[in-house]
Amino acid sequence: MAICGRINVGKSTLFNRLISSPKAIVSAIAGTTRDRNYADCEWDKTSFQLIDTGGFVAKTNNIIDQKINQQADTAAKEADLLLFVVDTRAGLVPEDKQIARMLSNYKKPIILVANKADNLRWRQQTANFYQLGLGDPHPVSAINGSGSGDLLDAIVNILQKTKKRIKTKTPEQRVIKVAIVGQPNVGKSSLVNSLVGQERLIVSHLPHTTRDAQDISLVYHGQNIILIDTAGLRRKTKKAVDPFEKQSVAQSVMTLKKSDITILVTDVTKPLTWQDKNLLQETVNAGKGVIILANKWDLIPDKKTDTIKKYDDYYHSFFPFVTWAPLLYTSALDKTRLAKILPLIMAIWQEKNRVIDANALDKLLKKIVKKHKPAKGKGTKQPYIYSLKQTGTNPPRFEIKIDFKSELHHSYLRFIENNLRYKFGFNGVPIKIHIAKTQNATDKTK
Image (cartoon, rainbow, N blue to C red):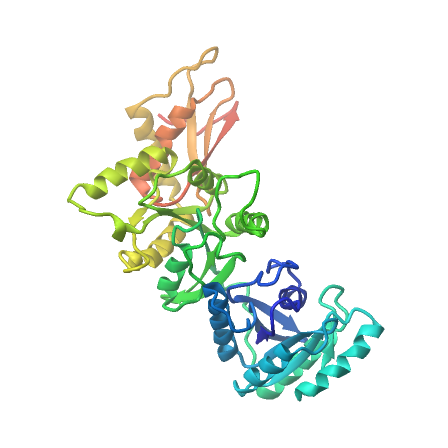
């Protein structure tokens, strides 16, 4: 079901109201919404998918506005039902009539929604919209929620009659959420469009073209995956160039925290930045899987046999704390190495949930200690490691048990982590190691 209408009539506010979540960025500035924004909605035991759009913009030479129109057109073609939103306070305007004729051409059921009818006086003004010939207007206030229940009843009534509904996901269906983050204009939206095989997101050379975090669902080898394109994140400045940047960035950071795997997209033709490093550090701290893309590889001239090695050395020296993360040299334009991304997502997901046998860990610990005993810390006794056990997954978590009077240096923890990776893999996955101290350990490592 697609929400359509002219710009600035409250479509995104209505979208948020119906899904009971502030998923779409809302602003009084016209044209805030650009890409199609999808969300599941459920009412009266009927579930359906709702699509927010930027609406239809009057004839314009602006390339962004033209692409917003294309996105709205695609949404209307996909939908089984159209919600045509008009502005009660602005009244009936010529553009509403044009859009009404346009929507009729889709041959889909249409519900006329008279938004901003916040009180009885404004609800009485909705009678003007009968001129559109689309039946009774449904007065609602997306701001305060009045009329939204009646609107949902009308939606469900039509969906049940047409038998158009979707099933609500059961808890057993685990979806892998992949956040795609990076600086503005590194090619995140182009990458998503290439992966899904359609222009799902508006692409432009202008920074911050993407504003809302966009969820794009796909199925790969039977596994449900959600790619979440985010607004470009850059170093903080005193003055934001884009009025929506602050909201977009906050939404992107929240998306990163809720994801399972993060793909950091960088522009290989430009130097890496501290913001890139901070994004990766935050990702690792949150226990997310990591994939690094050096995008726009097609723009690197005169590539030789050692070109990739030179870039490998540069990326690894800039990100020394994630040398275990896969690094791909890609081009969203000519699709270089894009076919490796989805298999990598699947592999990292398996690694995040991998369980290592206790006996295998015990054998590895004995080899580690035999190879290099932990050094004595200042003012402490010689550390004695009693055991190494796995305590959790997603991400893999381990516990090292030592004597309560000793300490382990952080360099030795890295040594243990490196051995875990060498023996068991964990490609693209952060490893968490916790130190536990004990006075009475019986399972001493010989």
